[in-house]
Image (tube, rainbow, N blue to C red; front, side, top):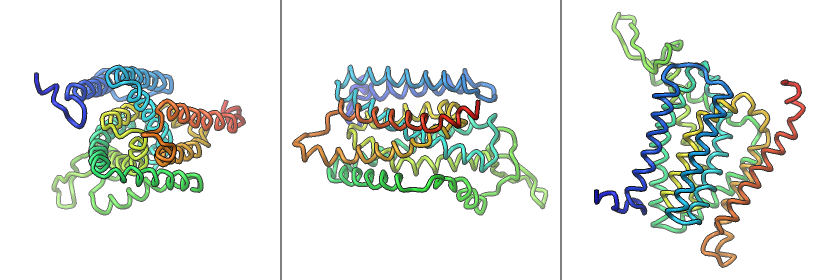
Length: 325
């Protein structure tokens, strides 16, 4: 068992093994126990599952705190909060993708489940690459910070609904390169159909196109979220685990929030301010004579910005809520 104490990306292998074990257990619980049969997921179940994922993430953060110290624990919680908030914003785009491809709620969980597996791999590649750059070239962190400030400013000035073309653009591009069925075929991503010559050919279904589109959308979102967490901490273990725990609950979060995303009309502006803050503190720390910005203050400001955005959204859309009821 000596391999468990070998250092891997800055942490003992047993810590990575513990994290992977938790992730595998959660995925097995989700697909193998809770959702063995395909069915629509209601809002109540979604809220309970989302709460479960958040509690497990907080417990893991407590474990990180105990094993790595208070600073690492606070950085994990801050990274988790930032990534979770960005995931909330992504729910709107995912809903647009499902609408563009005509995916009924019955099959949406299947797409999101396999989408999360793909995201886990893609984020690992992106974070490993980012960690290698930051460890070798410290100035890259300032590039990330400047990019976050630019992105935040762009989000503030962007017109509402600017992300609405994601599904349509990818749909057109994929249909030119992949043989696609005209309609869904249950939960299948691929089916065999007879061509004009009577030969059985493999064709993708719109369900697969929706999956690919969501994966591409996540890569686009990760361009913002991965630098954001690196601006909080350069600890690869904390960066990756906080990202993945936030993403694991995305499926439950989607079914809970997709129908009420209009109530979070000002969340994007809050996220924009948050990205500017995260990028700005990277530049502020050396100017203030600090090795790094205090994690406790960073977490507090993050929570305050997000709370303000959510509460202001709920207040401003209260009239819509009365109409809905």
